[in-house]
Image (cartoon, rainbow over all chains, first blue to last red; front, top):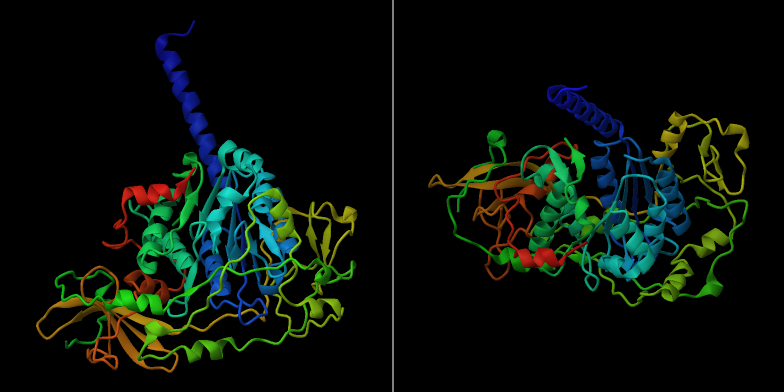
Length: 249
Length: 289
């Protein structure tokens, strides 16, 4: 019969083993990133100037976190190709892994604008929902990006964002707002703030770990200040995601 | 105001000693921005291009757009805050499933002629990919050939044993469109540090050069880590035609650091980096859970 002390000792051992296991899972976790950006839509009235550069710079920063990065720009950002690549990394990612999707380009209510066709937020959420990855994080630098919350069907929204609690969307602006870029800045407002935040500017506790909440607060303040409050980034995520670490240095 | 040259070794910490505020920066910010997002995509199904089923994705020979020229045109150092911008307006709404289906059917914005002529000319193609002799996309029914002509519906049963290394490499492949704009920077930051007036007061300043090679400086005069005025390298303020000091377009110390330390390394937060100027109610309203 076990004494109280030996029971406590055994409990500690089990807890210790579980912690070690959890740490091992974390260490082995992989991050898969799909980065997309379109600046040349083939129409001078529609062309943007900084969005592809945004994508390339985001890739550079994420390159410090993982080697599993796919970059698509311009004509390669077709609806089919984006969803195909997203499906591929979603299939590849396993439990404990993280999937990150970044887009910079035109947006419209309910969708981002691929080079050839619109890609609805509904499709993106549905695709992410297929993945076993433990965390799925999207960064959308496009006008009307805030419509993602309202444009996914109730079923997808409930199951993917509220239900599984593993998706977080950082979006550049509220549903009715535009997302701005600046040639002087050399970037989109949102992406510039995102890059600074990811690289440490949002790290309020200086522990070299960037959490979802730290990053969002930084992006929010930076974009509001720069845009004189005409652009409000939004975080669409369950509260359980707020303290997840996105980047470590 | 008279200043000395930036001391490169003086770091990025601002000295918040003075506040002869120049807040023209706010006005300049509005001039230096563009709207990056919205566009209207009209559904004209009959115009959807027919693509050869055997060749699902072809990189056409495309004329490179004069991106750098456009950027240079906007690089007027005397008024950088007025650098150009791009704007477009939203017109389409998709809020329910029916609308969502419509979105799926939207026609290509451009390039339909190029795709429909069936020519495959990858002479200008700059496909940046890792060296993979044979690319397989497990579970995706797609075989990627060396010529980057992607075909669908091709079984990959013979090579199901592709290793994880190959799969990882595939997931890390890039498809970069050389015709997409990769704008040159309008300004490039060189150094950041502390500049001093003849009275010994220190301010955070960043030296930069524009596309024409003109060396100038931005100075944060009120210590909020937002650059307020532009000066030449001798510290003389640049003035507009009305005699007002030119603003620095609301660029921040963090922006300068991001430009100077372009290698993606950790950038420690400064004193003013995480000051919430907005109310708690405001940010709470933009957090949707």
